[in-house]
Image (tube, rainbow, N blue to C red):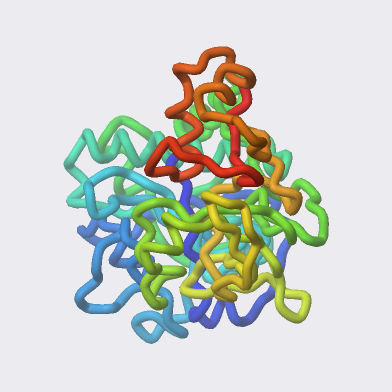
Length: 353
């Protein structure tokens, strides 16, 4: 499953902020010949592509309707398939037109012309994996009556409005809600379902969906263009020259969401080549563009910190800690060094064997 997150924070449903205890999952399909995620999810995060009409659902009442689902499945700008989570899973969505809003997580599969078998196969598989993930998260039995239902089945049960999706599409490719539920069950039984990050309890300082807390040392991923969607651009030196320390993960007790992305505040910066800590960029940054490199002490799951002593060389350090002096380029790369010269007292990050 290619799961990404861009919460529709401007949608009136998100703003309403009501929560549910999920008892099931409702499957929808969009009913429009447009398989592109950018039609519904926005703003562009660099993967979705630009929606020239700006008619995505990240606005109060898209198309004048009170509507919002928990996720969309469809195409990214490069043609690959992804799932975008657009509401917190335990948020009350506006999708069913009935009481299923109070009990069911919802997602929409972006329809194409309904005849492309390869596209259908890909999104069907992605939807199965999403449901297996959610069933694992909330301990749901996909074969239990009423747990995973299509919108049309919700109508028959009196918990949703009169829609035919996805029955208008699945049978064209030899599938049904019954075969869909069976596929979800198979994914769960095989152990292939992705391990959920929610609703496993997290420390108060943790950011939902990320291994981040106050004091975590991070770096901004190469190629990152903006701190969060529609924000100012990330200067090159922020990426290449420094690590950054997370100094705040909430504001007034609430997770900070900007441009639909969960953000953390980077209030300190640490020089990659020297380890010196300085005042930072003091900017809220999308957690998805950060890579954890260590904790507040500079230690890391992937490397150790070494203080250069008089007479040390990169070759000698590599020989001592990595088992071979020939591995010294790994230390150079990790520390962003442009030469083999190191200075006494300099702090170096050395990969663990």
